[in-house]
Image (tube, rainbow, N blue to C red; front, side):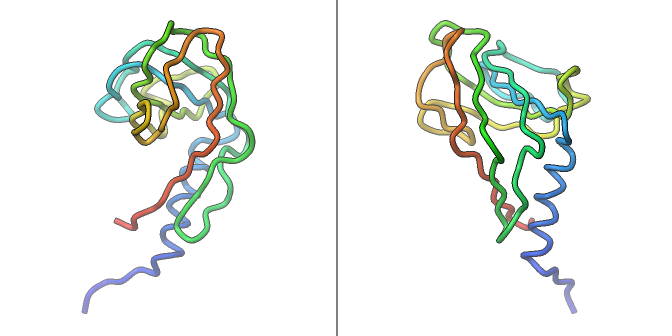
Length: 138
């Protein structure tokens, strides 16, 4: 007999754990360049955008998906026509490094886990209009 899991419950629980890990003081950042090897690695690239996430950062998972909660919009602090390369979500608004990184992914113009509509320039407003995770139950 093989072990089987109830997919919807397991998927939703695993997604909700992400929101719990980010916690009440999450930070979202976009950098240039390739993402680090894993979340515990040091930050890489040039910081383009940094902003505090709402609490909670994500809505409750349902049907194996979880979407951002509230408004994610910040003013870029770096770059002059810079191409986004990756993003990181941290569980701290004071320490943003490999010790507090909870999630990271690639970012690109027209593709990537974080699909951007153009380059980023300091002073520009950057809004994340949609950000949804789908759990694969791996």
